[in-house]
Amino acid sequence: MQYVTQRFENTQAGLAQKDTYSRQMAAQGYHIVSEQLEAGHYKGGEQCCLFTLCMPCVFLAGRTPGIVVVTYGRDVAPCPNCGTEVLAGYQCSNCLRMASDRAAQASTRTAQAKESIRKLGALLVEGTAGEYRFNWQSLAKPFPVAPPTLEPEPAPKWPPLTVRAAWTMPILERTFSWVHKRRLEWDEFVYTEANKRAAVVEQNDRAVEDWKRSKESFDQEQLALVEKRLRLYESKDRDALLEYLNRVLDQPIYGGQRKPARSLTFLEAQGKLVVGYPLPAIGELPKVEEVRFSQRENAVIEIPFSQERLGDLYRDLITNIGLIAMYRLFQSDTANALNSVAFNGTIDTIDRATGREVSPCLIAVQADKSDLMNMNFSLVDTAACLNRLGGKVSENLTELSPVTPIVE
Image (tube, rainbow, N blue to C red; front, side):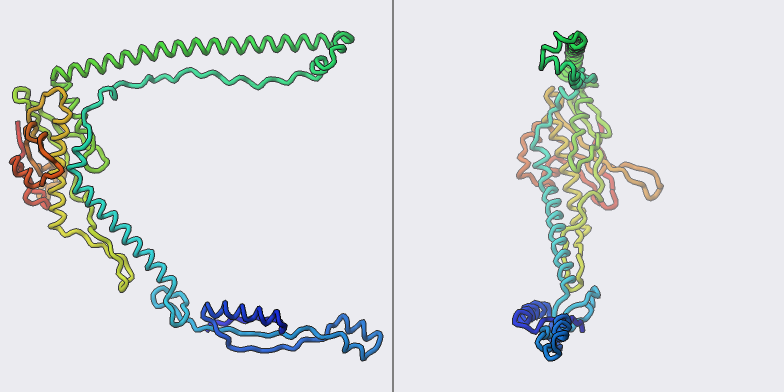
């Protein structure tokens, strides 16, 4: 039992207060265990005063109100889950709050998991929806020198008292020569400071003009360099072409991390590009399909993807990456240098038999520009598209069984 004792005056106001307090305690599960009435006593100060007059007058002093002593009690027991004291017959509010929090957490994590799966399903459409032509102007470097800045003008000095007095009463200058001298000295000081400031401003203006000329010259040099590289690319210069295609593939496809192409081989006679591209590991896929809250176990339970489902997701992912990479290369090919692209997707791992680093090819697919650019990716089935292009994907992605890459 938990007990609470409260005292109230045995007056109309005190009894009203007791009733209000009892209702508040009842709402918390308390009930009245006992009530006792303590009688009031004679008022001591008045007794002494009246006793000096007449002993019987003592009884005229009056008594203080009596006190009602009320004891409240309620039955409590420790919660079997968390140990918090709980009112008998009621659920533990702490456990209810924790259960609500865990249920909300499970709901949030399930929504996040579903959003991750949605992004995987929409990767092909969203990955081919943008503009992937390289922005040549991004190669121009910004002018590395900051523009000159004018130093702030210092706060004006307050004129001396003598000068202020001379301005207020000009007769002082005519009467006292030293006042006139002080005023002239101040005027000379103000004139000198103004000339100094004018010289600083003029010097800053010249520096700004010099900076503008230097920046204009630098920007023109950068523009000339960019135009030169653009002309080399448009003329299908091999080095410029490979640099351009590398920059196109440098844009991330899955996840935020950039994974530049491992190798690019351009066969000029055929207009064919062979790409070696690093794939994400299967561990980068979301692992949880759903998160549930179990009231029976009072715990958040993760429902992971089955190995079969995870393998299907990974197969779709690496196939989509291959299709997206080829599409971006074709879509950005303003020089019309590419007729076909061969995509070899590889992954870094350790050969368990030798303990050495290897990079098996998990997907190999080739497409002609005309075929791929005429596809409607919003309706494309990944597996059917890969089969139509004659592509190959590892038969055992868990063991990273390789396929034969497309060579030159």
